[in-house]
Length: 103
Image (cartoon, rainbow, N blue to C red; front, side, top):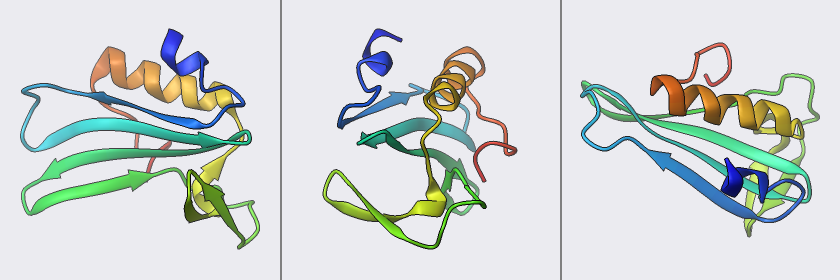
């Protein structure tokens, strides 16, 4: 949690990995942050390979935002740091993030 809090309103990235997790199943949750914008993703092993699930902000404009040198759709970003903390906490405690949060 200490490392995650250090990302609040700063630039950087953090990932949590499950070692020897279920296959298929979640493998890691990640956040990339810059200027109060956060890109959340979940890497999940499937029967056919891997899927990347991400946050969907349906109210955001169809703009692109630079996060750590890469352009991302604003619809994939959140500025709600409490949501970032909640997702990391859920992943840490359960090894999963609800599909209501990451699609």
